[in-house]
Image 1 (cartoon, rainbow, N blue to C red):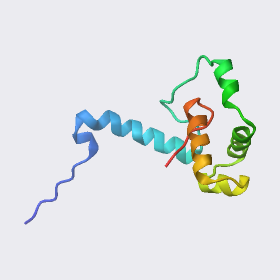
Image 2 (spheres, rainbow, N blue to C red):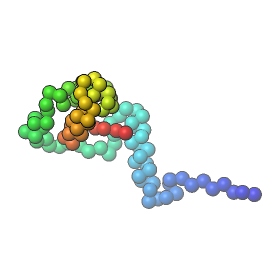
Image 3 (cartoon, helix red, strand yellow):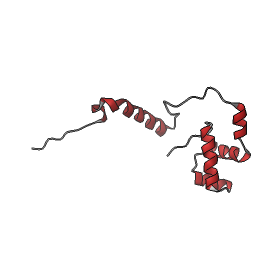
Length: 102
């Protein structure tokens, strides 16, 4: 008679904390909530921030603020080259204005 063995993530105490954190993040995403364990911005360099905001980047920010969109979708909506949009999205992400997800 074969015996079935069930192994869960909790069996690996080293990984249990990471697993629970992943579950919490997944549940928050499902509910459309802010992600737990996220970073909080406490200070902004206004001079650097204002240099970052060009008209085209502000247009991307406004579009993303209204609805999630892919880089290809943003490029189509703005009539811009996807590689240029990707560069701007990367820059906006680096200053914390947008966040990309897979």
